[in-house]
Length: 466
Image (cartoon, rainbow, N blue to C red; front, top):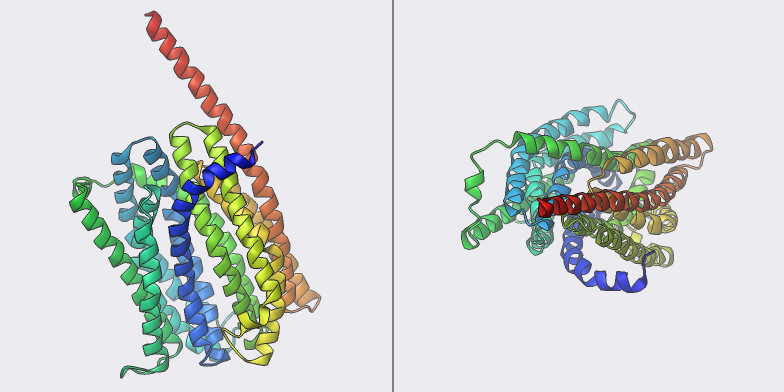
């Protein structure tokens, strides 16, 4: 049983690691927040195009990022065990994987644009969504390189530069949106496609910031990174993919279900999908805080396992969940009490605002469970277990949440509200199951590491007798 004083002692170290990661994740999400807020001034059609295009894009971005997250537990466990050279080797393996992965994901984004019309999206929305997707696809290769470096830096507790890159990229994106969406500084007003170009440029900027930082660290701390560059790390790439594939599938299942919900809302018209996107962007923005905490928890758990300390891993996992659940409870209160001011950040259209306000009330209900589930996933990933989250998400989202939401939306005629109620039910079930899964994982770690200590003790005793 975890005691309060154990969580209190863990919090300073967790917060030192988590706060810069959270700032980075909020900066990441703020880019989409700024895109939606600024394109919303153009009109409901442009807002719907960017919303649908973003829903398609994020699936491929998450597939690439999820695969690269396979190096997360490898680096954090090696760093906890003091194997810094192995951390550098995994960094290069991730870099070798990231660029071709980014190109493949970009091709997937381009190809998917042509599926919007056949699934029933309105032609005027499709006409703006396709060029937006083309522009966004150009930012995927640099984004994947950025992710490979980010995972290494987080796993080795160098997180401030990641936060700086993501937060400052918002300034680049805001300036680009201002110039390219509305047509300032002598540039044409491109609307939705201008937003896509601006975001792609901001993601290239993020990559350049980390490349510059890595070069500076290499020179001043004598990392000798180029010493590791001449080898193709096939074995490590395989290991990253083996751990990353379930993580990628789990994230894709989660993001994909909301993308599917966005496409379903698109069949209900521009007002429904615009209100849906406003509520989704707010839920996603608050989600960035527990997502950052989850990444910090993954690193802390991985470090503990690298030190062969199951009790420390247990305390660190539950501490992360407690921190995330506390924040999300506060965000639920804000969504419940101040929905209209939140919606007016994006639009003053009365029909869209009415839908957005009602969906924020539903979002407030699942905030607590959203914080628990994502942090439990981080703890499990840090321990090297990425499969249970994949299985739980598949059942919770695709066998419970989405079918229930689709039935309530189209079968019962509840519209977009039915979609959200169904997805909320799926999310709540996932949060409960993953909390139990982490408890069982800790019990397994105690047995594994306990047996390992006994084996080492026996081996040491035998050598003393000899």
